[in-house]
Amino acid sequence: MAATGAIGIRHLARADSRVLGLFGSGQQAEAQVRAIAAAQPLDLIKVYSPNPTHRNDFVARLADEVGVEMRAVDDPESVVSDSDIVVTAPISSGA
Image (tube, rainbow, N blue to C red; front, side, top):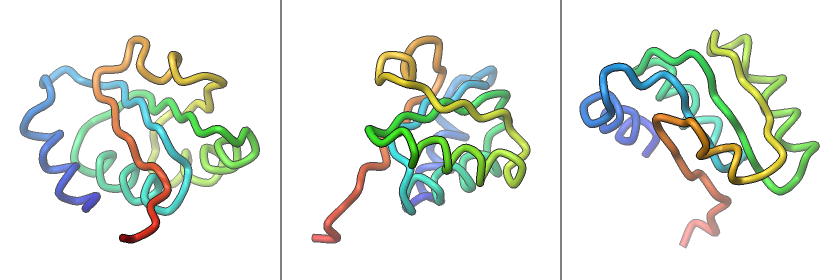
């Protein structure tokens, strides 16, 4: 699923899109970040999830790996404000 989304972003986002807003900090969000960062040049990834510890740990764990500045943000509005691309990766029951 993450690879499909990254391919879509690469072909449908504006060529100058450099800021990703991400809702979620679980496994699906991690897969999305890795795939999108590999497919689309990014300058910044803003991450929001309701649990501050989860979002801060997520950013600390992935920022160096993907080589993109990542910032945990405190509210949903900050994710979409000034973002070129917005992705949701909520927890899923797998149903």
